[in-house]
Image 1 (tube, rainbow, N blue to C red):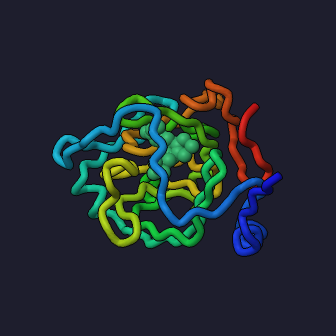
Image 2 (cartoon, protein in one colour):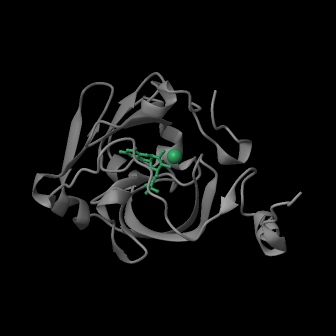
Length: 197
Ligand SMILES: Nc1nc2c(c(=O)[nH]1)N[C@H]1C(S)=C(S)[C@@H](COP(=O)(O)O)O[C@H]1N2
Ligand SMILES: [Mo]
C-alpha cells in the first residue's frame, strides 16, 4: 500500500507556531466567493456606517482615500484550512471611521455590494484590529479579492473579512450573516477552531 507522504518539509511547516490548529500554509491566494464578482467603479462606490439609532455617515472613494492610511502586515486563516503568513495590506482603520460615532451597540453586521453579510462584535473591529483595505501586496486590491475595498479582520477566520464592503451597521444584538446562517460559527476564532456550529 502506498502511503501518501506530504514530506518532512511540509510537515515541519505545518508545525509553525503561527499556524492555528488544523490549518496548512499556502503561498497562492485562493479566491472564495459565494456569488459573482461585482465590478465596482470608484465613482459609484460609497461606504456607510449606520448606528442603532439610524444615524448615518458615508464616505466616497476620494473621501476614504483622504483618511489616514495604515500599512498592515498580518497572517490570514480561511476556514477551508489554508493560511497565509505575513500578508501585506494598506487601508483605513475601522477606528478612524468610528471617530465621533456615538453608539452603545455591541455588534455589527457588515454589508457588501452583491448582498453578502457577516456579523462581527464591535469590539473585534476597534483598537487596531480591523481595516477597510484597499491595497494588497502594494497594488490596488483586485476585484476578485474584494476591490475596491474589503474589510480585513485578520484575527478571525477569513469569511469575516467581507469583500466589496458597502457598510457597517451597528446592532444591539448579534445577527448571523450569510455563512453564519448556513452553519458557520457566530464568532470564528481560528485559534479555538470555531469553524462550524
Ligand atoms: N462579499 C463577500 N465577501 C467574502 C466572501 C464572499 O463570498 N462575498 N467570502 C468570504 C470567504 S468564505 C473567504 S474565505 C474570504 C476569501 O477571500 P479571498 O477570495 O480574497 O481569498 O472572503 C470572505 N469574504
Ligand atoms: Mo472561507
